[in-house]
Length: 598
Image (cartoon, rainbow, N blue to C red):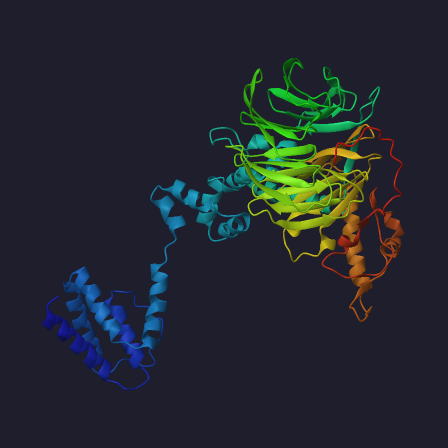
């Protein structure tokens, strides 16, 4: 743009702006700016009165000059013009430009034949945002519907969340997922209505865990000689258990019938693990045996330890075993028949009761009260975790977290990298024999015959009171609890009482009846608390009296749950005051085998 032409235009603008010193000065400036920038004639602010003087003629001259310039010159001129304005005028210009700069790209992309890009963008939304997006306009709703975005959302959750994956398998709606559009699949509306049902199922399962509401199935192992089930592992089809009578029994998980009995060990089967090819077992006869998981044939027998093999783990071609002889053996598993000893780890001063490992560390726990950490790659010693006051019976290690149980009746949480004890959980009355954890919960079993469910996230929070950590105590075994495993839906445990128990938190008879009772109890409690005041705030009458107020409903808590008789402060939920059964008198144990703990 020529300097003299720009100066002339600015002079015309300044002349126009100086025509009036009244309150409409800002409106005139904004009008000229909008006209020069070829914007629409609608104005963010209305003029108080018609323009005066030569404004219209001068405005036309400015527009003619502006139209003759290149785009770069026009931008430069507008920058000069804006720099001469005050902050108040800048605000008006910003309000005018903001909607002009916004673009409905979701609507625009399909018009350019780019539907797949619009679908891909919206596929990253969560459920709440997807609901909101459907309400924007019909075009957005069409993109979501034709793109099957509710189906994609459910598929994403199934891929990333084990709870969703488990529900898809158990409720059989997985068959409608992960299919392309050429296959016959339900419409988007099916998945949109399925999503809230899944959320309701998840909330029900979580409530069942908190309340201890479960369906119980019992397998009687019927051991002929010595009674007791020392170890187990399960999947959707079967449960494999190691027994004190030297046998390994394989059970159908649906019918609970014994499918096969494996014999060969000359001592109690103390530990086992299996995958899709083999079962590996350790025994008090000091041997490790490898079995074909399908035929039950013995494929290999490893003779190395001098005393009972107490625990073992294998994964990705590596196996670690530990023994009452105080040693840890690290093995290379090229195949079921080609297993060679890599290294023997020595350092514990008593029986090594349990091992666990990943690609970084091997972790072992012993009757000498210590947990030792070793390098998986080099088998070199790294550090010792000290804190338990008596021998350690069990542990699990994952990521940076180690959780251990001891004959001092406590559970400890450790940071493996620094060796710090993060929390001590107290509640068991005897030795803590088995322990497992996932992202939400810790489940422990002890020689007091009880299984306790703990809130893992609360346990990792140093501000959480100790009294809030134990969510539920489950009491059904009549003997010491030896081993347990669990997932999002169930706990499976074994005991000295020669039984395997399946605690199902998903498929519960009378679930609707129990939900009704819980909801009704909360509503009744709120209504009865009106007018009841004390120095500590509102209080509730006893739960038993609340339930008696509705005899026609014939509602009562499920088996294994009782209601407290004392008045309780009102919290976020009345249900949190439903407690487990009171401690029962200690049973006389008939367990005659010497404990392996130091």
